[in-house]
Length: 127
Image 1 (cartoon, rainbow, N blue to C red):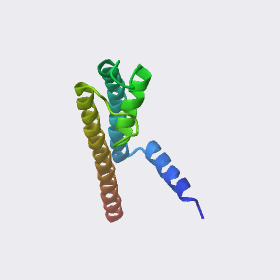
Image 2: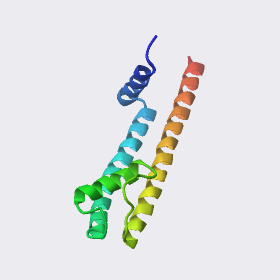
Image 3: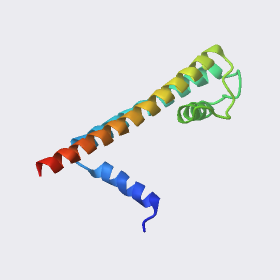
């Protein structure tokens, strides 16, 4: 009997290496979201640092980058909230972006599984 984590890793490996159009589209969507999120994280880190410098606990670019990363990866964090009005707007914008990304990635996977199921049924019918 195989461990469930090994099954997940095998499925991930198959998705990364598969050559079907559905797999390529899923990889493309996830790569795009990842790239946009990394760029947004760096830009938002710079904005947070410039807005919050001298007003709270975000005193370095590293602190700002840590804060923006936690905001993008979680819906809430234990890191202190921004103190300036601009920082608060940035905080809300990052939270909204994070929710949109989560739902978009979930939709991409749902679309992928639906498409693969349809492809398998069409292949079975034509065989």
